[in-house]
Image (cartoon, rainbow, N blue to C red):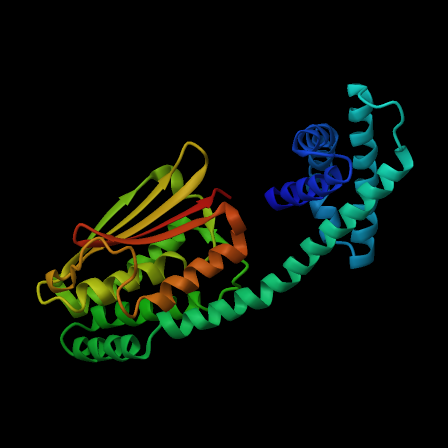
Length: 319
């Protein structure tokens, strides 16, 4: 939506250049065109969003046709707004309707191309994430832990293998699907249960969960890779271990905030450098890329090192 508005404003700014002899006249023309163009764009977006499910079931040519018709309606609405302002004597209703249809066709084309490009890109990112997150040495260590438990604690060994199976099953989900945050937390907990057997008291986990956020839906395998990243670079290299804190909050603006923090080995505390430690880049970039593909500019991702800890913060709209 934001990009559509910005795109229309750019076209209006270019159109205003042809009628403004200087900067002041250009601003006046831009303000006048915006008084009609911006409401028209918002009307088109509202109509398109209200027909989203219907358009999704249509073939490409029909989507373009409906989008163009809605664009022409929006163009007429924009012209009506200009007529109400009464700042010009003659308004070209037909030309404005056609212009609205052309701009709508461009927007529909962009949305279609973006939708077609999203699935393979998300799938590729998911496959890359599998290689980075379900790592061979993690599987090796988990199986060794299960073997060690089989004789003395067969029940624990069975639970470990069940947790491992659930982790791998989660990686096979459709990357376009969404799951409840409570399920994502359960998946991360299963991973931590496996690692707890390896690290024992070296792995300290603290959960800070907002009950209001648990029913929110988000793409699968967003939280678990961040938790694994914290264990790998916080707990594993430290002889004394580390504390991993997982937080989930629902903001007043209906955004989900996911925060994963791990304390750092004193030998790795290099100051407030806002970059990931060596080896963390791929996992974090995969998560960030998936967020961009699925939520565009509505989501945010940050990774910072400060005060002896490393923190990853994700913000995404409630759904």
